[in-house]
Length: 420
Length: 165
Picture 1 (cartoon, chains in turn orange, green):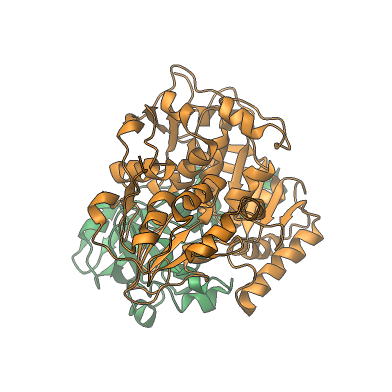
Picture 2: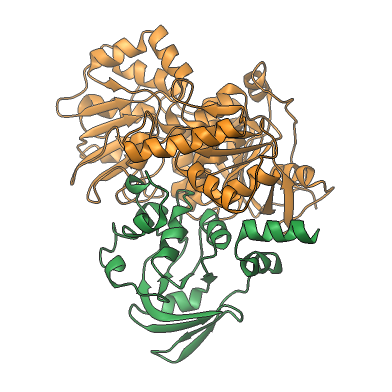
């Protein structure tokens, strides 16, 4: 029996010709990542265990993105811990205010992660980089500490679910609608411990931003990783960016999958996940009675350039509805700059929205858009758990940038329809 | 090794945002964070939990964020063990890495009720409900993971491995 794409990457990084699902392996890491919340815990563990150096200063990435510019004194202390550690160990991929972006928008953009890599990150959405054809998974701070010290991590080789994508997405849908539809179909633990491999002619038609969004939310189905095969779209994206030479792995024709799920992209509709689980999905068109107080467009899921384009297309020349706060957060400084250069920034302000520098802020209820009791927010973020964006009695509805922007204009959850 | 205590019962898909809300994550101090453990779904937990008590939950316990603060605050509160039908994978890894005992046992998680008195033997995986008198057998950990637990966490096991190798 052959290997899946994920299994092939893991085998290569473990120095083995073959691995199979369930096998415990120790694999070499190409990048070990942490942020301003998880790194301080890792630094503490690293020091406590008596390690005095990182395995490779070019293979550790520390991104301050959750609470920066520092939201309060305690957050400032956490940033300081990260900064001092990065400085002491000459960490080359340290991203502070001014250079930083939301980690999972930033690392692909900067070419820090590439096809064929084996990556761990002390952030659950580290699975994003599977869009580039890498094996990439979220871990905790102790795993990050061990990874920084040794350059290795242990894994149980995952089995896989194959998603065979066909057709072409309707123009009012994006990768977000695809992944929300899939999570609605299989549930928040539907891919627990498994890989989600996205293949088929439909997969090749998806843009890189759509693929990054889809892999980003693999964790919301419980998956260990999400992954796309490397094709011309991937290679064009990586060209001129990647620090390392991309390595292309392909699943064997006789690879074993626990399940194969066919998805016709042309049948996808604008989809919203209602409180309080990402699996609680409904067509946006059925939720037009739900009035929203806030709209957030951003996050590691949807803070990329195509997401800003979707917001611009809908908001430009229009006005955010009275009583709605619309917060737009470009994912990286480069994306923010491009929003300025293309005139999006001005158009967003003219529409009555606010634009923030990159931050995870509101997505996890940190700052920059916290909800009061009883308030509802439609957000392009990734989780709608109880209390996720603020008060325990507030509600988050997860949607695409199209649906979020269209809802900002009406004040109700609204399916975006392209004007003919 | 074992634990004995009162049961706090929780549903399916308990996520790390309710175990420890992100609004408190501007500090890595486990004792300070532990004051807020579970507060968004159970304001009584922190007031009532005693050393050795047991959390019993449904499917996919610990889903969501990778924050290691989640198993850490459960442990810091004094919780002796978490029994669930299944665990989200990052939580599972983190719990082992920081030394919070966890056991997967569908039958026990289904049948044990809130406030029951439960005894757990980690060496054998036997869970005894002292209130009803019923025994359950949890899935044993693979030897590789047992070794991490025996060493007292991942980093200690790595150090030990380096010393032995």
